[in-house]
Length: 87
Image 1 (tube, one colour):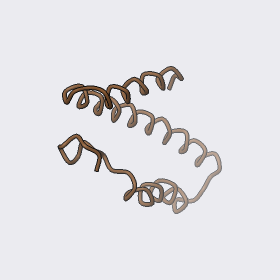
Image 2 (cartoon, one colour; image 1 turned 45 degrees about the vertical axis):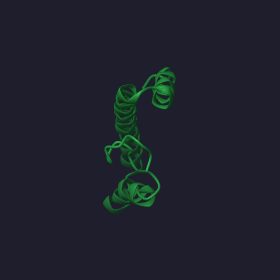
Image 3 (tube, rainbow, N blue to C red; image 1 turned 135 degrees about the vertical axis):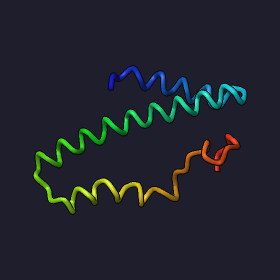
Image 4 (cartoon, rainbow, N blue to C red; image 1 turned 180 degrees about the horizontal axis):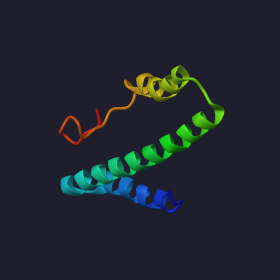
């Protein structure tokens, strides 16, 4: 991902805080899209190094499953509850 995307991401966050409901909904969707694309690129980098180090399948499963399990209670998507407010 190019580095300038971080500025666009910051703009989405500003729109999220100062916009009306429609702008907030658009900003939330754009933030989620950007986050998912960064996640896909991040997983590809992780997979590259896991293959390079030739780790076992068990270690690969730990690398992919453990972080979401540990962070599940801390981070929730605000758009899931349909109110557009942080939980």
